[in-house]
Length: 328
Image (cartoon, rainbow, N blue to C red; front, side, top):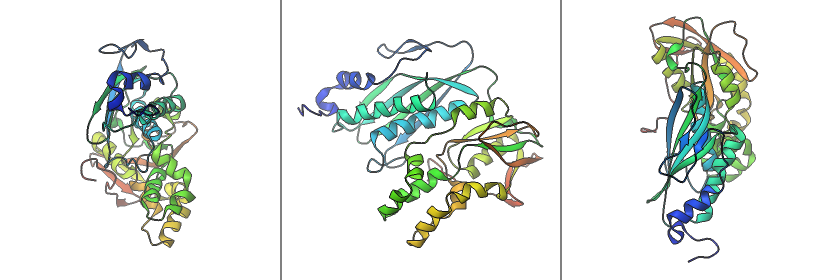
């Protein structure tokens, strides 16, 4: 056995899990924490449940993401979905598949990333359990729970006359991914902020909850503005008209990174990042016109027609070209 840093195979499931669980903090919603066949979570009424899976080679690469970053990203992607429904995150469970050769130090670092993500995004939420198994590649599956204090905010509530609103950033995670994948490593080193958002997103959950309290419809922008706007349009049976002029600010902060890539012969376009790049995990909502918005929210368009289920950029159709977890 490698005494200083054993693999999970050398240590065994029980001891490996014990070491990982030691990094988690207790939460106020948990009556029975990890250790039994199932956790018990306190709920005063309605709650939401969501799940998301990250697969090595399709959703992340181990040569680009540290174990800590993967833990933080797993938290961010799931808690954003909970908040998009108008719920406060309370608990998550994590199922993890790793090769037998995985060092226990990697597992502990991943657990630290989970806790760090919770601490920075929504303190009080808790990892209450999960599963550890051996396999050929790393697979991370998280199920998150949240408590609703009012009716859930659905994708199907948009109405003609509503404003289209974004809370958070657009395009930064997509820029970070292209910078990371470029063969010239100096590009990623030159723009660490965008790379960081790709590897460990930091969605504005508190702002998202404030926006949800006002919204007629809402979702987490995980797959790109064009794709997720089309989901609201389809679910609500309306047309969303986005204004290109309202997206210029999102594009401006990415312009230099795009220019740096094109100067080195790589394809990059800041508008494409903003329209079609996902993983910032910001929030897209429709809100009745005239509503005073929370700080950090920006109006980017309006709902203009009923029963057409389309998205326009100015007056031109905007096709959904974001991430597709099966086809991409």
